[in-house]
Length: 553
Image (cartoon, rainbow, N blue to C red):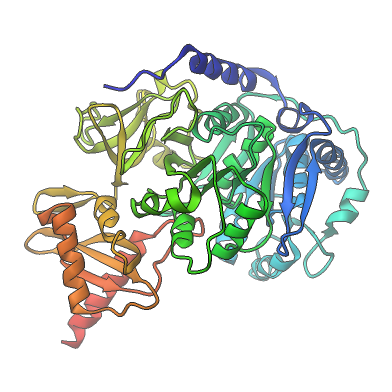
């Protein structure tokens, strides 16, 4: 039975947040910028040399007003799609606020995307303007050379190549005082695309009312407080970084950090120490990289540490208390919903961490595990579809993908009752939820349903294993056979003995029937740009390898 979502204080806050962002006369730029005191710190930008620059809400307001007015003078209007192919910078913050001030819709693009991924999102969204760092202009040039994007207006940090405007030149064309566009809670202000882990990326329209759920996560899940030094290390080209690295700051008014450099364990540790970070959140891959760092670990004592994007494997929390001063709280969410099941940090919701559990539904959301065929709720410890009862989830905001009714039907039941996450999970007798797999990653071997994450959680605790992925390949006898792909530490050499050791470890620590029949060793695992392992690509690669081996036999 699901645990009641605690105190009247929490319930009251849910109602307040929904009221703040829903209903008529809602202006995104006003809520996210203009309503904050002008002298309050919004962000601290950390450059690659670790020097810093502070930015206030007043500065963001004045500069975004000028940029919005300049865009208007060039003929752009509310509802237009405007994309950003930009790294973490002051210009990026000014741009997204100008987009919302104009009433346009922000289309985030991850800077590591290659041309085809950029082209797909720009074409699908119908973007009219692309704000790009100069370093990425060659990607846009290649797209244009293929005959696409001739009508895009390109604004860049430098007036080079295919740039139509230099950022500062366009800014100079505007003037301050541009009032924010007023829409309502249902007005779309972001069009973001899913990561494409299991198929073609899909456009998700994000309405202003979604900010209620985003701020609720900042308060309940992360417990961001005014006295925190808050750092979300995720890239804002993806949902978690945009929703909870940028919007978490702009909704709560608690200042955040933005690091302009590339990720490395050394840089991450230096920033945590230099800035005296108290509240940190990142993908599990970041924590695993920190865990394997061979340099001297600085003295760090966080108040809160959180992980999202992929399930958190247990090796991290064997390491974190000594290295970081706290356990890392695993959180679960989706582009279409924000964060929805968490090991919450809020004092009214905080509980002891249970290994393997992603926690409880966030206040404002009501979850259940459904039978995949009947869509009826299952009892404790029965694996099924993780779903949310929309009639009891006032924080829910997703109403469908853009121009993809078939895909929408896979997420929303025809009666409008359930939002189906597409993930397999289970809930225990105490109402704690445990992730198993994406629904298309479930392995059924000889009649047994096996979630790859549970096997991966055992393998990754072996000292030789850096990361791994468990998949299934066709098998005449069992239907499917479970296999593992493993990346080893630099000083470890693959061997039959190691394979047998890893297999025995799974048999002993998880289940005798669920050990990987074969283990493949690779230097790296294929991932989406947001860091999620692409199991479907591993299946393709191994299937092709087997086919080639069969042809040579």
